[in-house]
Image (cartoon, rainbow, N blue to C red; front, side):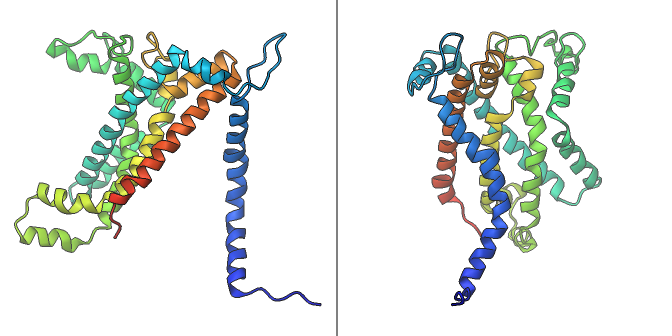
Length: 297
């Protein structure tokens, strides 16, 4: 007996699954399965000579609770995120508004704003290492006339995290600018014309009309900015290596230290699960709470 022919709905469903299958395989191989492996490793102790790894679900959690460096890195990461995210998004919006209008040299200005994005973070960190060098760095030369020269920005605990944040803002703002620029160019021109006829100022038009319409883009950028705030670590490896006195140690860098310098893979897995849980919680808050305030056109 011949099998019954597929209905239109089943054919469409099968076609959809076949189209999704390659991406699903990659996600399973490089995201879902490693996450499960990490979660399983976090429930075991790290083997040492004479003491093999054993199943101890709470051992790493207890060690984490007593680890002062972990809490310090977590606190620094929140400070870093609270400074990086609003500064980067605000600068990206200002740059997008600046290059959206018809101004001379608009293409070159867009290129200048976007150039830091395409540079490798390792190269960016080395450039800024020269900028922050006490005595002859660019920052020191600019501040010297005001009596503020000679400060070791990367060598002082009070300013090292701030200096690292400045570099990340400079690197990421151009990337987010592209999304804001695309959103601005999709806005109907009639809105600006109507605001001009009503005698609305440029600032009032941006605040009352443009900003609400940019909320979907802002939410998208916000989600990516939060992820970047917890994953950008290259500049710390090059510039400070977490110092001085762990002043720039953030969570991902501490995971790198534990896993690849101290060779404590299972404790590093537990730290990684904390990072994943934290990002998942923040993502839920962004979409479940902030997403309700976004109005899509």
